[in-house]
Each structure stands twice: as C-alpha cells, then as structure tokens.
Image (cartoon, rainbow, N blue to C red):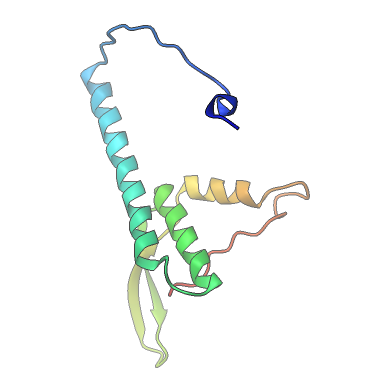
Length: 123
C-alpha cells in the first residue's frame, strides 16, 4: 500500500501572507512549548523506565506516559513504608484530558466498562 492510498484528506492553501496578532502568536508559541514539554516528559519516562521487566511495570510506564501527554499535574501524596513510617512523594495526578481519554479507552460495545485501563505498578 503506497502513501497515496493512505491519504484521506488534502488541504490546499494558497500562498498568502497571514498576519497573526501578537497575542495570538504568543499563545500559539506557549501552546507549542507546552506540547513539546509534554512530549519530552513522556519520552523521558520511556527511556528511564521502559526497559524494566514485568507487564505490571510496563503498564505503569504506559500510564505515566499518557499522563504526561495529557498534561496531568504533579501532586504530592503520602504513604507508609514497611515499618509504618509515613513519607511523602510526588507523582502525576489526573487531568480532565487524561480522565476523558481513559473513559473513552474503556468504553466499547458492552458499555462504559467494556475494556480495562491498567495503571500498573511503579518499579
């Protein structure tokens, strides 16, 4: 199958000069920068943790990459260690974009819980 058979839509834009207001340009630049940061964070997760064995750890890496790509905020949580001492740590929370993606990924022909979404276990 050639590239031509894979193209569904083509948009032809005539050569024109478009003047974008400075405030819109700044907003677009900030949006592109934020998207670049999200992508870099996801790639960093893949490189740092992607080689760890175990399906439960791979699921965690995938979930963390999705959280990074959907702009989840960093949140502080607390837990207990094996000696029942409390400690705090930072992790990615849930953005509305993440929640929507997971909801859509789980939905299917049998309703909203047709498929599972595994968050995995941190290595």
